Length: 232
Image 1 (cartoon, rainbow, N blue to C red):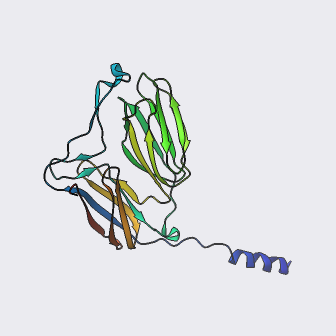
Image 2: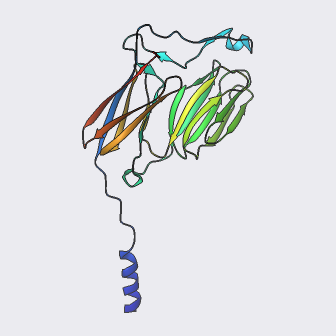
Image 3: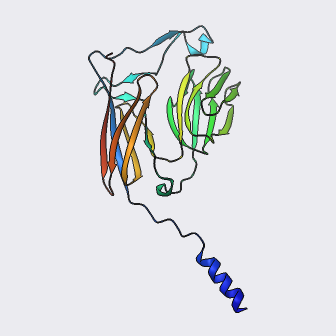
């Protein structure tokens, strides 16, 4: 019996220890477009389902604030976060609505294993077709229909509707929750980042990628400014 107890005691000492809590800080940033005249919105004429979708559409591929030149719908993500420093997180859910012949939201971030719920709020056929690390094509034939898929692969997905070619959305899936999408003023905030020195990558569908180094310290908020230019 003593031998059995000794073996049990040994096995218990070899069990994994709980991961120590990592000190964290925050990152705040702004994405701006430099230059003179603001770019004009891209407009398309439409002949598909015009009774629902209208005769023309303005794309959301470059939305810039007239007040501070902030770029909306840019995706900011922290690169190379050590897995041992990433706290446990629960997969989430993103509702991607086909509404008024647009995808809403236009840009989003998700953690791996999260659920994408495609919804059709229009009285016509839409598809939610994902291209990227995995290809998924979800048919939404009537108003009110919903369909769910889990995104198990990380990377950048482009979403299109096969019926209405102007409809496009962007989804980035990461193995951690340290990412964000810029708002109407070009601002973003990422909370709870493990302290350390990182590269933060900003990606925009029309302007491309930019990178900045950032130092995250315990209990503080690091700031970063990302600037694009339309000049050649």
